[in-house]
Length: 179
Image 1 (cartoon, rainbow, N blue to C red):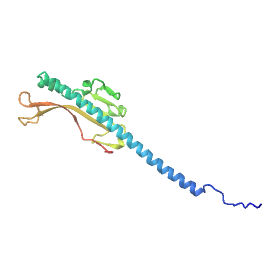
Image 2: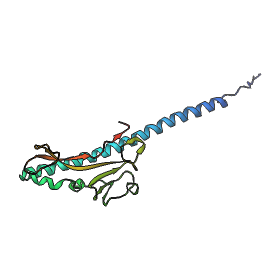
Image 3: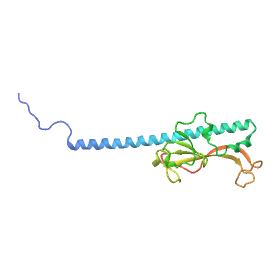
Image 4: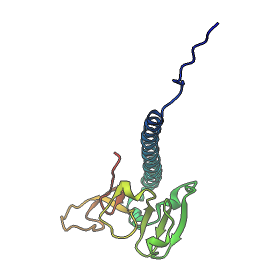
């Protein structure tokens, strides 16, 4: 019985091996990019959830004042720290700071700047966030009075202008670049 042996072996050639490595590298790069986008979306969603909770807490404050027939006392709540109105503060809220350097605050944290009366969120994924602020990327918010300026002078005048409530207002425009 005669067996014929072929010199051609089964398996990958060097070129095929390189092509497989390139293909796997491309898939890995795409997967990492998608994962990063998901992390940015999670940060944006978390920030918006906290803002929604804060706005609900503000509305409860307004409703409480309305029920007590004390709407004019809402002026005392302007520029207050809205985190104080939450029954449970977010885990990434680090408290009240007095005019901190944003670079000294860890990314992904909320704080209230007691000097400027701003609630601030320090963004983690700065490459996907845009705002006009210089320095570390952040979003700043402030509790403002919602009223009708009856005398049209651009400021609230007690016993003239009509108060509607409070609102949590962004101080500067910002944008998440994955939206």
